[in-house]
Image (cartoon, rainbow, N blue to C red; front, side):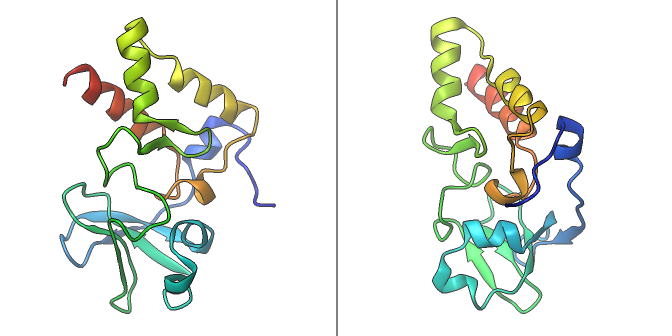
Length: 154
């Protein structure tokens, strides 16, 4: 079983290396095999290698890229990717199963959301597995905060 972060701080300190997307040039982060194994189809995974870059530019169709010219684009991942898919059905937290629709529902019904607190509690309990479950290979709380802000001001 993969190692899970014991605290929020450990979860958010998954080692990263900045890489530039070959299509848009935006600096992304390096992801490892454990991330790729869970987010690239088995048919594509074999030829992709054990590490890649993740492009975090929402307007770029590239999700993953490797040094050999390999690209995985939007729509080619196992699940929609938060920063690439603005729809309500996209997860904002893959470890605990929260989608944009959950945030939108909370904000509409209650005027606020406790989803970030639920995630932080789960992390403190050692139940997150961000490097494996999140296509970005890291903590989702930044994505959650961005989604809340976008929904509040839409």
